[in-house]
Image (tube, rainbow, N blue to C red):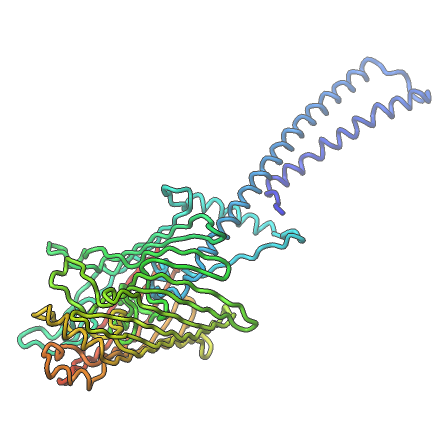
Length: 542
């Protein structure tokens, strides 16, 4: 049921004088005729006849004006009905398009903030009114709805198709001071031993972690709402030109297509591992998660997956399964500009993964726990086969008021391509020997890792986070293999990381954050190396 605007009500109120005049006009001749028949009045004079004619003419003009205003009011009501229908359709399509883009989407918190971040994100729903009962809406809500319609016309992004496209992004500036040697100045992943004659620290700033994203909402296909999103950052490399360290090269982060039914979704494209959905909260490490080399499986992977949701009385269950094609970060090609077959692709099978999770139905204090299994067959140069596998667990649940605990854990072997483990800062001198001997040895070693984060929200603007993570390989296996392969001496056996940050959001689109981060890296036969970083992040979400 639709309701006319306040202006329409005002016009309707002005119709009553005209209607009242019509009634008087109709009644006056009758009364006059009855009085004349009864002989109670004198015959009408010329003056009285002229007055009656003038009144009739006035009332006729009033009726004409009333008819015009009625037609205008009817037109406005029809336009408002059409506008309300369009808004409800857009809200319905937007709600279905956002299904599944929550924490389980694999986008880190910063991505979720804009897309998510960036892209990014969150689930939305709209209650469908019952057909047996008319919808009720107040005058204030009606005016707000009209304003939203005008806003939709203003912020619409044009596209080649007639479907809606949303532009989002994160403009992020980071400044940092490093104490100790690290592998990457602006985004350190491991700590290195001191270099004689070299500075014991560094300071700098960067905007290369800025992100831009596009989200498109398509037609309904086979009963499913379709959508797609694309995200890019500028951390893909450093040009060898003046200003190269500040500009950076664009790289593709996410590119995925979705089909969302009421309880089922299908996703295909470049995505985060769906079996490791949680992400630590940090604005100093946005292009990769905070523990990308210390317990967080994260790397972007071509994926085809499906998920089905079950509603329960007290909780919601979800089952996910898919095929993945992970990169081989520990596998070096002789020419980095040429893409060669990875060990996973050489096995002629994809990587298989499935996850089962349960979530509470509470919107204020949600809780989720999930378990996943991964199987990744691999074939290396020389016909050496490795059956990679992993078991994972993820959790997110509230503690006391305004607090939350989240994290992940994994164990297995041959899963270096998903991240979470420290890599050697060196490149092998003999790529063929590495591909046929060193890489299979690394894939055969057991690995373990995980992270956990404690979050405290003081209010909507102030937030504190403390998190720790670790990831590494079986030290005994690595030490034994290093006895015959010297390159393995440069591969860290274990990497630990800790960070604490404060995030201040004076507005929903403005972000300030300060962070302290500590790294500790253990070599297989050498003492551990440590480094610290102090950072400041300033971001704007659009």
